[in-house]
Each structure stands twice: as C-alpha cells, then as structure tokens.
Amino acid sequence: MYNSSAGSVSNTSFGGRAFRYEVVGLRQNGQPVGSAIRSSGSVFITVPYNRMNQIMQQIARMGGKIINIESLMSSAESNGQPTATPAAAPTTKKVKPGHEDVPVNLYRPNSPFVGKCISNQELVREGGEGTVRHLTFDISTGDLRYLEGQSIGIIPAGTDPKGKPHKLRLYSIASTRHGDHVDDKTVSLCVRRLEYKSPETGEQVFGVCSTYLCGLNPGDDVKITGPVGKEMLLPNDPEATIIMMATGTGIAPFRAYLWRMFKENNPEYKFKGLAWLFFGVAYTPNVLYKAELEELEQKYPDNFKLTCAISREQKNAQGGKMYIQHRIQENADKLWELVQKPNTHVYICGLKGMEGGIDEGMTAAAAKFNVNWADYQKQMKKEERWHVETY
Image: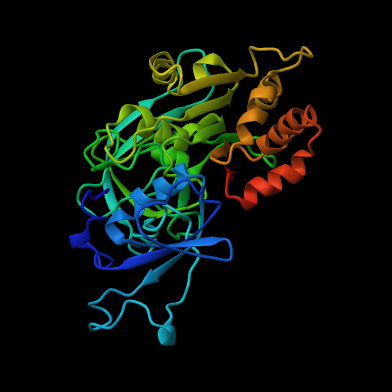
C-alpha cells in the first residue's frame, strides 16, 4: 500500500537530516537554492530532506547531473555537534537521483502479505489469441507500497508434485503507486496464462502461477511478496522523454507510467514531456488496454504517441511480418534525435527475444547518421538511460 505520509518529515528518521549533492554540468546562469561550493568541476549543494525532490528538479532543468549523494548527520544525531566534521566524515554511498526511498522486500516469501482479489478481467478481445487478465488486489490491510516499474511476487496456492509449497513468480506491476482506484489501497497485474505443448509428451501444459492467477475470483486470498526492482523506475524529471518498447504483457509497467503521467492528478509530478509507446502483438484484439491508450493519444497528442506492430496482420517494407524493429526503422530519424537528448530514457519490457530485434532497428537508425549503435547503447547504459526487463 502506498502511504501518502511515508515521505513526510514527521514520519521519517531522515526528517532532521541534510544531504549533500555532488553535481556536474551545471549551467552558470544561476544556481539552485542551497549552499554551493565549487571544487574540481563539481558543485556541492547542501539540501534539507524536505526539499530534496524540489532541488533535484531545479538541477535537472539547469542541465546538471547528480553523481553522488551524501547523508549528513542531523543535530539530534550528533548531540549538538556540527553536522559534518573532518574527523568523522560520513560514508558516501552512490544513490540514483530521485530514488532515495524505494521500497524493497517489505514482504518476503517466509512471511508474505495476504491480499484479496477484487477483480479479474479478460483483456483479449474476440478474435484474439490466448488469455490475458487484468487483476486487482486489495492491499489495504498491510504496509505494502510500491513504485511504478517495480514487481511483486505471487505464491500460488497448493503444492508442487513433491509436496512442497510452490515457488513465487515475479510479475511487473500494472498500476501506479496509488492503485487503479487512486486510493492507495490496491495493486494490479497484467497476466497472460502460459500454455504450451510438452516436448516429451505432446500434451498441453499450463503454467502453474499464471493459471492460478487467471482463475482467481473476487474475494479469494493471494500471497504477495516484494516489491522488488529498481531498473525500471521512472526519472523524476517531468519534462523527460520516455520511449517504451513492449510485447504482450510487457506493457504492464508502461500502463503504470502512462496512468501516472496522464490519468492522475499528482501535485508533485506534472508530466510535460513526450511518452512514446511501441507495442508489438500478434493480432489487433491482443492490443491490451487499446481503448484507454487510444483515448490518451487523442487527449494528449503533443505528449503521447502510440505505435503498434501487429505481426499477423501488418506487413513491413519487405513484405514480411511487422515487428517492433520495423517500426523503429520507420521512425529512425526521430528516434535518433530523441535518444541524443540527455533526459531521454528508453524502457524495454517483454519477451527476451525482442531485444535482438530492437538492437537491429536501432543499429539501422544510428547507421543513417554514421554512428555505431553498440557503442552508443553502452554510453546510454552508463548514463542509466537504457532500461531492460525481459523474460
């Protein structure tokens, strides 16, 4: 559950503490609020806890990059001594800017949170392939909270063939931190029922956890662990460019991003940048959340773009099936322009096999400008602007 007071000064041990940011690349036509000391190309800014996010946004607008955050002792902790002394310098720790309070493993497998299924809705429309469900769970009776881009673990009911409890499976969260009902009391998943033929027997096999989840009824209990994951977190910059590439249920974290950007009224986060979703599916009825996505595109034409690759219905320029990499190649000029911006982030989620196709598409895009994509991608990863979660 998201606790709206969890980050307040009165409810955290960090309330009286200050933090020192080490910033590089700051433009010189002004300085953020705070005490800044320049040394060896870096600017050091002392920031009180309750102004951390505000100062981070100011730094981003001025072209700066935070390369280190150091916690300074509060006056209460140091019994009236100065907050930082040369004799007892605090240990520095690298922290990703804007992600200082990421909830991780609030509930573990040996002591999971037991939520309740509120709803279980089919997302694949008539004529589509397979079964995909949007599930919403009540988490109001516990302390589970999470951020967009994280995952939770699900422990299926029952035991395996050896009589042991089933192991947990991880699923990307499909709702914002405030939940689908915007009341901080729910978490949602987008789950495809796994089914395949056994290579040994030829029999139809159904995935244990996905079948369990797809068969839940409102009121059923469900064991939840986590949350986990920091790779897919959104930047706090409301003017960032967010490029998303998904196949199938890989859309789950991107639904959470888009709902936070456009469907919620968040005073602390007013998205003004560009969000571009590339979505690959087999058939049109498999475009998950299609009506909602198209509504966003119509309502926010300057801030959201939807580009679908429907492999069994559309043809690429060579007459073959249309996949995400072909859409990337079609939009090569614009994509290359965008990924060169320092506040552009690329997120990839879905089947692991999609990564090769995306690299193929981006290689073609970069080649038009005589750039080696592999080298540029490494630089984006180093700058923490290339995010991948595939399975």
